[in-house]
Image 1 (cartoon, rainbow, N blue to C red):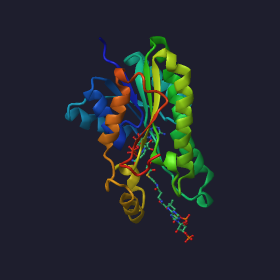
Image 2: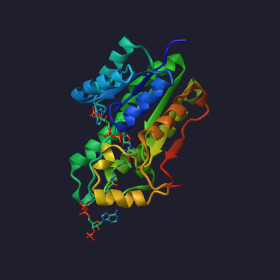
Image 3: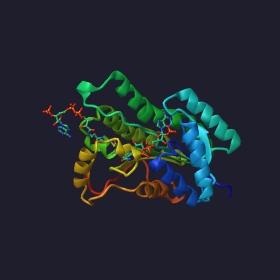
Image 4: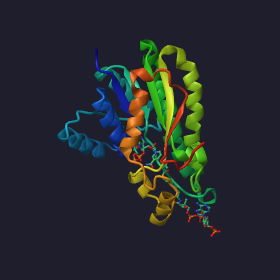
Length: 245
Ligand code: CAA
Ligand code: NAP
């Protein structure tokens, strides 16, 4: 049987790297999406030294045409993407009264429009092969809200609506669509939070630590598996007990 292809946007980031490695361990041919070429090339070499042979593909996830071009390149070089992980994301934190329109738009475009962009360009070939897994990386803050993140919380909550609607559209075609909502995970993204606030947040987590990227990766692997075909339209919380609902 031929090797299934997985595309992980933001594949060179903290959580993305763990997802790429875990999916490769599970036998997928993994392509990491990136927007920063220099970082991606360095990343690819480091991963190679550690035994991982990843493809890399440029896409500005906020831009539909860039995603289309990315998909065409992947398709001609590797074939149909069977697993799409919409993982790329950014924060531009500020309370609403201090938030510039650019901070709102950048986050909505990168964190939410991206999910439309990539899912739209990958879906046709998944429909043709009657098989696919779309996994959207949302956030605990899309479930509970967070001071200073109206933009981010709106985008991450929007993913849930998208997931449930698309899951219904493609359920009979062998394609599942799910969301994972990580809590605070130890990557560069949370290092942007001032240390004092970060420590307060850590104290609020019942397991008393931040999550590890590998703990999100194993959840992705669970949903990406062939025998996860009965799980669709769901949202899996992986948050150390910080938010239960
Ligand atoms: N709840 C209630 N009130 C709060 C508050 C909170 N969490 N944080 C600040 N305030 C209050 C302050 O006490 C202050 O009150 P007064 O005006 O009465 O003195 C007021 O709000 C200050 O408001 P400002 O708009 O001036 O706040 P600021 O500019 O100093 O800081 C902020 C705002 C940059 C958003 C800062 O609070 C912050 O960085 N918060 C952390 C946000 C966060 O958790 N981001 C997560 C990033 S990681 C991630 O997103 C990954 C993931 O998915 C989990
Ligand atoms: P990270 O290390 O900062 O990685 C973010 C990745 O997103 C980077 O690889 C970056 O790639 C990519 N990216 C950003 N803008 C892009 C764009 N316009 N086009 C293409 N790629 C872009 O952050 P992380 O913690 O791993 O976060 C990964 C995902 O998990 C995000 O969606 C985040 O919201 C979500 N999440 C994180 C946490 C957490 O606590 N860390 C919690 C819940 C959810 P380049 O460097 O190439 O631009």
